[in-house]
Length: 200
Image (cartoon, rainbow, N blue to C red; front, side, top):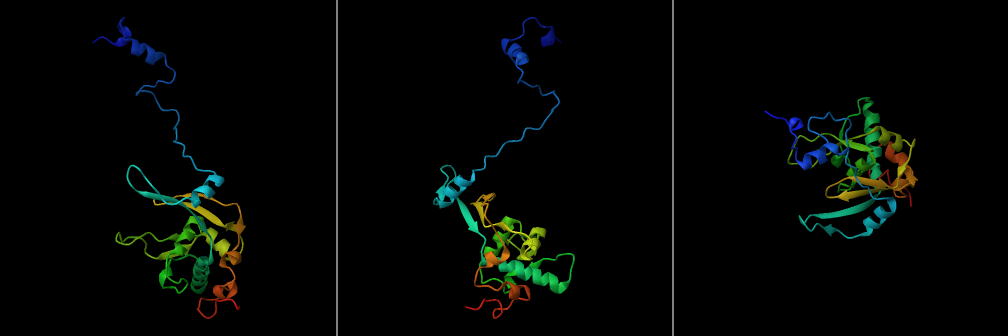
């Protein structure tokens, strides 16, 4: 068997390939991993994108939109989770069933808190349900709810494929996020419908 190296009549394309510094062989050892770069829009672009209507993909027909989610009074769920942890005096930081807590008035806005990394969901074993409804505070969520740190006021998130694209630089604390309609200290001392509203 005659190898190309021994053959005086190598094809021109092989000479070109052998002399090309960018050409690699399947037998070469990889020296580095080249990661595909992902283009994330800058903040000005995200602000503009969030004002655009829902767009439709020309190939698959799927719909997509960038939303600007503001941290709002649904942070009261964090107060309830902190209260439950205090009641149990648990260092294991258990999951709690938020939909039955009384801390929400229906809807799933509170689940957006995961975009800021303030809560995390318990892994869901039921494939027929989107969520188990069981959530717990993260370390950041605990720091935030006790007033020891602030987080961005606004998160930019793309649907339906999902993904946090960026945050506004403006920071807010737990009391600012709750707004004037909810009393922080009452919430932290146990959620009831009669105790948590701030006096008018």
